[in-house]
Structure formats: C-alpha cells, structure tokens
Length: 336
Image (cartoon, rainbow, N blue to C red; front, top):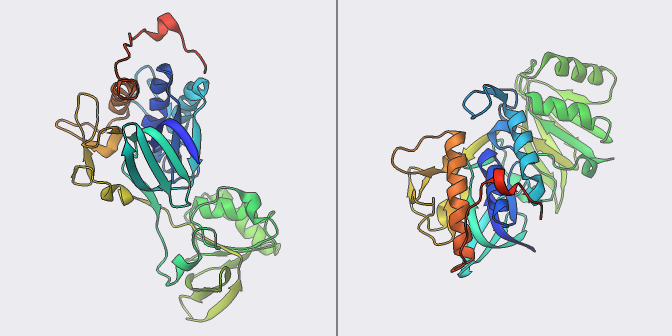
C-alpha cells in the first residue's frame, strides 16, 4: 500500500510540474502512469521534437523539457508507479481516497489530480483471441519495464518500429531464445537498427519471422507457445515462448476514468476554472484531459492550471490553516 498527500494520474509535463508546485506547499506526490517512464507523449511519441512555446526557452527538445521537469521536482522526492493503470477510485470520506491499479497496487491519498493528457495511452493489441488469459504477469505484456525479468527466457516480440527493433537488439543478449515477428519484409525503424537486427539474425542470435502475423497463443496458467502465420503462404509455425511482447504502438483512451462519476464533455473532464476542481470534491483535472470555455491545449496552460490546483488542494487538505504565498525568489526551494 502507498500513502501520499496527492496522487497524480499521469506523469507527463503537467503532472511533473504539479509535483513542484505541490512541493512548495509541503505536499508529497505519488505519480501513476501506464507508460514505462515519465514524460507522457513527449517521451513516448516525439522525444526529439523541438517545442517553441515554453517561456524562457526559444526552443527545447521534448525529452530535455522532461529531464528538466524531473530535476526541478527532485527536491520534493516524488514517487512513481510505472506500467500500471488506475482502475478504481473510491472516496471514503474527506481527504480519503483509495485508488487501485490493474496490477492491484493500492494507493491512499488525500487529493486526486488527473493529469492524463489525452487519456491513458493503451497498447494497440493484435487481433488474436485469448490474449487476456495470459496478461497481467502470465506471459503477455505490452511494454518492457525490467529487462532482467526476461534473462534466460524464451521471448517473442511482434512489431516493426523502433521500439520492437531496439528491444530485439537489447534482449538478444538477455533471452535464451528471441523471435521477432513482423508483417512485412521491411521495417519502419531507423536504418542502423534494421542493420543490427539483420546481422543478429545472420549470426543466429535472433530468429526473424517476416511477412508474418501472430495467429494464436497457447498455455495453461502461463504462456507456453505462440503460433505465427506467414501472410503469403498461410503456413503456420509454433514458437515456444515464455513471453510475448506485441509492440504495435499506443492509442489514447479515457479508460476507467469514464466510470468514476466525473462530469464529461466529449471525453474530457469538465472543471471549475477557479481551481480546476471537478464535480467530485478533492478531485482535480489539469492539462489536456480537462475542458472549459476557451480551453487551450498548451503545456504552458497546463502549468498555470497545476499552480492554481496546488493552492486549492492545500486548502482542502488543511482547512482553516492560513497560508501566505511567498515567491521562490524570496524563500527558495527547500527539500523535504
């Protein structure tokens, strides 16, 4: 069980800046993100993309902005849960929320902040029946959090982009057997990565199944094998596998948030612009996931929302306690 003052759902730029703003008010934060690392879209989709509208930075690469935000939050020691999605939200009383993830992690918080950007980035799953049977620790995952988990194991990776290629290269030295399945003879990834994969295949360190798709998965309590079908010949081969990682990209969805009783407008959360609170007392929504009149989906607007939210959250957690805001140029940033 994890206990914190504020649980932030989403570790993108707005969620990370909320850690800083909350930290100035001596509130601890725990962040939960379905992605394997902090950064949201900026890290997962376009880390090398320049951003031009961050105040004080004529141009900054997306991953550099995330690195700076993490460094800015460091004095306040945020904690993280990656690779998990919040499934349920229960309010048991004033300043008493209990959240549970898809991996059964339980988080107790006084305030909930939804900073999920466009929503929870969910993996695009292949159209193969029976996948669900082997999810959640039984052999099928859609991202790699700890490569050491696969040491000496038999692995099947499916996909043809940079992520599939990069992991195939890395895990070729970790797994006892590794098969890369791709529906074409050409890859979408970086040419250098493609060359490395082809060389590893020539050396017998990985097996390539090109012009092929995943057809079926088999096993009892754990995954044991994957059937792969050649698109051209329709021939099928069975590949022994302890793990299957389909890497077909991510798509944003609101996910379980839709069932929490929040007021929604076209898959966005309606908020009060006084403090970006929702219709549930103690729950806030900041960044691209919220909506209000004249809403602008800009990172800098999310930063503004994070600041106002934090001051409102402080008052909610500390009713009747008077707080006088002091500028950081006066009081500095003090670690706790």
